[in-house]
Length: 339
Image 1 (cartoon, rainbow, N blue to C red):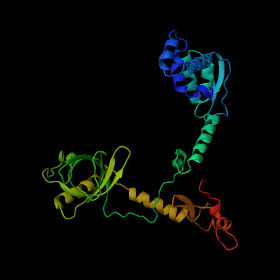
Image 2 (cartoon, one colour; image 1 turned 90 degrees about the horizontal axis):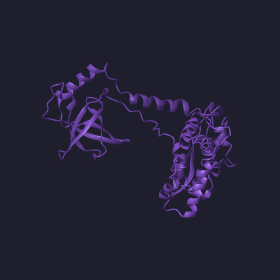
Image 3 (tube, helix red, strand yellow; image 1 turned 135 degrees about the vertical axis):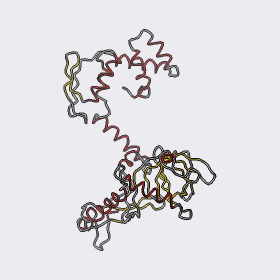
Image 4 (cartoon, rainbow, N blue to C red; image 1 turned 120 degrees about the horizontal axis):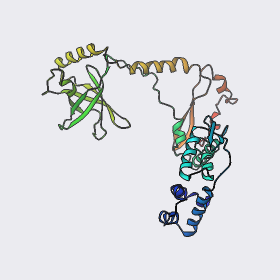
């Protein structure tokens, strides 16, 4: 497709099924009514070119990221991957036969190495023009945050358990929620994002899902305070702790027996244990033994500059390579702001 009509690719795609229909010209004039006549003529010529029958065999082995296999169409064998086969069959249904448009669509699928290389070049060009703009590529390589030395200790068991609850704010506003895990003195719940809840807010909670099976006091709620609020994709997760100035020993005893009696039915939450093991693994086994050179990048007055390098016994020699005669590290000259 030439650059002159590349901007009309969506219209061309929309008109492909109509190319052999008697009312094609009428539909073209309706769909492209805002386009000048000379451009409409180019669109029509391009569609007629794409609709011409094609006899070329397609062999995508080594040209796409997918695994190619023999694909037969009208006694002719092509070598296509799954994405190309799906594209071939869809385009044949659109044109009614194997045409140049089918050939070009199959050889320009998203997993084609040539197409991917072209997209990478365009993205690199955009990143060069906007060095401080965060792109999809930079998000892909963003490392997860690990807080070393952070080992949460729990004073009581927390059990994964889902039950409906009703939370009441200090203004007596009702908020429907569902528990994620429970303990005697804490809760983690999820609720809709439409409710504006903040850290430190005091709530009164009624366990509606448990009231149907157990004789809980339906008049008096249990006092909790929000410890923190985490925003998820479709909802918000709220961590709550009991208010110590509003004790309820009857409820405490009920919850203690409830968790103990259901430990075999519901899994005990071990998120803190997994996090501690992960952090210990990085601290004691990974950090002392990696051979790469992690560099901390600082942002000063809107400009990025390397500030620290993390050294261990395995990478000390590589770090020393970048030191000058007075033992100043010059690795910063390698890490330019654009890079």
